[in-house]
Image (cartoon, rainbow, N blue to C red; front, side):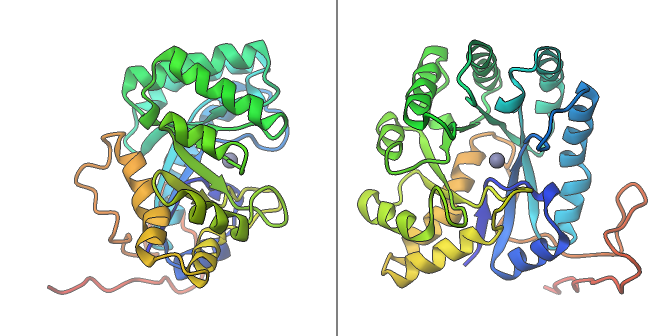
Length: 298
Ligand SMILES: [Zn+2]
């Protein structure tokens, strides 16, 4: 079974992770822009981070046979940092035009402040203007209120519901999101929030339509193999293979195809590994023998 992890911060992960993910069937990832764990002090740090997601990280994924796309946006954590936030908002239009950017994200609420309200609305407006999907995370604190507020703001701005993926859902927020017609993401974490068994129970209750799972793996305690692990638990519990395939491949693909930037891109075929390749003169290898997949002869 081929899989798509539609929310993972690969720049915080190792090459071992890329290898294990590819081996487990993950052939496509989407990396939303994130914050680095401590406050950025210059907008230039964000710009270089965007450039890295578009360049080096995409190259690194290709070196292990994985398609890499990204979502760019002002991170909710940074929306309350005045000058930095304004600087990122000014950068966004230029970077959102790039081919491998399939959405605005991850955007959303953190502390649910007035600044967050204003900047989230402005980014949803940008998504609407560009016809791009939006990947919106729900806050860790006061989640149900934050989810309702997010859904109301989407309606207020007039971004069509089908262009919105609300992420980090729980048993409490999922029905709200599905009722509105948005897509529902679930981040499967080790020992907290949502796990494989609870996710399986949700699929049994709600079905597979507009349901998406991801690892949300980053520099914190997380597991980049949570998508295949969840698929395995679903299969063992009797969920049909077609439904699982829908959740781990068809749905994320259908959601991000709405960007219009995957026309003619055959994602089912993983990129051919050629570790002799370089990016700006740099390799992922440290003197090892490059792996090169043989061209398929028709
Ligand atoms: Zn994230």
